[in-house]
Length: 265
Image (cartoon, rainbow, N blue to C red; front, side):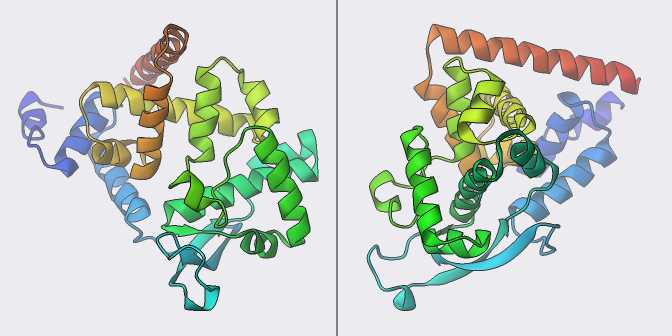
């Protein structure tokens, strides 16, 4: 790409800045960067309406609805839930069994509810997963005993917006747990855990370059709320051990980017 073409991307609009970083930091061609931007905007701004396999549409109470108000009088919203994530769910079930799979799905569904401006009850989870409310209550109690925060409708008032399970997983990694340990203790696939840590590292790399949460959100195709969760975890784990662990991950990320750049040349 010619230098004068790059210079024209220096304007400070979020879209142009996004494309410039994709070209310079991630080594994408301009047309590819533009296509990624379009896809990110559709996904993050809610323009894409098609459901993927394993997804369903459900109606949940809005997150800002008055606590304790009768469900019939509460404002609701239609959201998308990923009940079945395919290969990732199959990995959990094969490794740890159906109970672990269900507990992993509970965390994912609660996260998806929060990210779309709603909050789910244990009854909502039971209907989506085709089990009894008693089973969901037992699973939630087990997860909470493992130190996992669950932002259900009954608990949300006491914990605020609720920190996503992805951020909680990253926090465990920063504190020294291995990928395997985290996967088993939080009922996630190994590939999921690795992906969350890699996404976290990209968020921090862009944050260190001075980008805003909104700009980072577009670049890494994560919700702004999750980016802010990752930044919170980053600040909460500002210790020599965590900084070293993160630096090693950032170096691996940079090496991967250099390798990919060479392969494209």
